[in-house]
Amino acid sequence: MATVRVTTADGIGLHVYVDTPDVSHDRSSEDVPALLVHGLASNARLWDGVRRALYESGHTVAAVDLRGHGLSDKPDAGYDFATITADVVSVLDALGWDRAVVAGQSWGGNVVLELAGRHAERCAAIVCVDGGWITLSSLGPWEVVRERLAPPQTEGTPRAAIERYMRQAHPVWTDEAIEGALACFEVRDDGTVAPHLTLERHLTILRHLWEHEPAQLYPRLRTPVVLVPCDDGSPRVESTRTAVAAAEAAIPDVRTVWFRSSHDVHAERPDDIAAIIREEARR
Image (cartoon, rainbow, N blue to C red):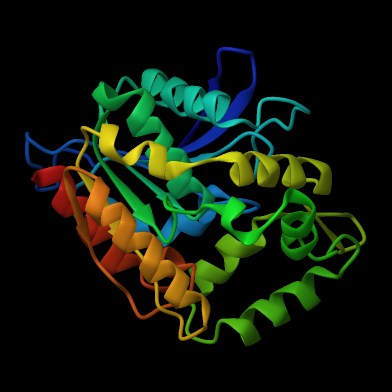
């Protein structure tokens, strides 16, 4: 694995993990690379298992820490969809990729949907992992959504306590997935953590997501789309089914793969998600 630093059009540095198989791997000349985009308040390391699975199958793959997240720069501005998708294009340019299969999870699913709407020529396909159809305005006014979805206070919590909570909440996750989730936090000298994404920037992104209307993009998409919704057994799955059905009816080239899994299916079932991305790259 290599890491590269990509500079965006407005001078922001993005941290990118890149895996390029050597010639000993069985690679298809028709394969296109894959770019992995994380969700809100997440980071590129949650894709470690998917990256590994793709690399081991001979596939070139990269994962990016979006601005404000992980090891990337953390400016106060540029968290709207136009700027974030321009950042993703900057990554594709820096890697020398004319196009890629671009997969995004949760908020990242909406990001890659927007990317396909704005820059279809750069997307061989998009894979929307439990996101892409998120329409927060359906939950009510911004003030209601802000209060309901504001992140919990974790700053100052010992890292060991965060890890213990994650292992209890996700008993089927591997150590690789747990370490990826812990990479959402900066660890201070005293052993406590602070999220890489500050509360103010988190809420700024949430506001842009509340304003985002993915349904307006559906009929205009000219990129193959794979929807990967998750059924976690909670009441939310009914609204997910309704939203996915609307997307299926409006997107010209779409297929859907349901998983019985938590929201973070890319961390929980990385080999299965990698298989979907690999299939799109070879279609």
